[in-house]
Image (cartoon, rainbow, N blue to C red):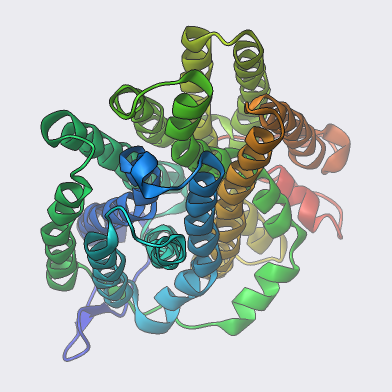
Length: 469
């Protein structure tokens, strides 16, 4: 029932934070959480724009750059790889340095790849140089892990689906915004002026850094806990959810990076024609992510995730058919539906994570704030790992498309592989989280915060499976 307090001289550290206490939440917590959420979205949004910059710059890289389609796919795959790998240390940095402090650091670090690109983006630059700069852009993708881990600690369980959906969706939309900015640059100045796009982001990065330093907060109760990281890594649900998140977020970021290249190289679109289409899917997928979180809050994340993977299977089936028939209209329609579904799935899968660990805390006999604290520390650690593994899905998609184009000149073979993956994801979701025999007798996946029925001793994971995840 205590108001949030900031320790003097500690750089906006709040030493008491109990969002599960409704009185605390209504008096003080909601306002503080929303302020931190808004600024988290700003920094993460710009981070996603920087991370996906090569997917846009590839449209500017005409024949004079001497880079073939396979080389461009590899550049965006490198950016994906580095961004995914850095998500692990970024996710744990929040507890070590504080959410506000790390947001300031990570936002400022975006100046390095943006400045480097501004200097080297011209014909005659070696492919090795572009590869090194692609490595630098990975820091933008890593921002997601620290941002999600931070915001997860600010919100009560009943609102995590919405809050995490808004945070991630606002960040994801950075992909669409930079693609729109690329379209505007090509339309106004031509494909020979990529530096105009890069220069526009420098003051935005500075503004995000300053605003984060001025208005965000660190949460004192979130402390560096290597035990939480080890425990999350040993929990099978961390790796099951990682597998599912590859199917949702891995698809979103992989398709976002690759869509324009596929349109250019399989359907013969010009840079301007490709740029006029590539932003639509990421935009819709980003906007719909909070809806996926909200649906998961109400219906249960596992149910929404299962339905979503079923629909993704159908959508990629349309993409395969369009690729075989060389139907651009059908291909675009299928891809847009697929983007929307990846956004919904991103929201529902991330809602499942805190629900799982909250239920496991209750199953251990913990209640109230003790259960909430344990769930926050383990779900935060788990999110860092799950976000990293999910990011590797973007690498897989771009490498699969690269190989498919090298082998057959189209992306059809890669799309068929993706279809099979979604079928497996749907089966795993059902078997682990929804199949009646997988949980306590008579259990059912609930909505909202979830309620766990009484079960026999030793049913801890079954309870988690039916906790409204």
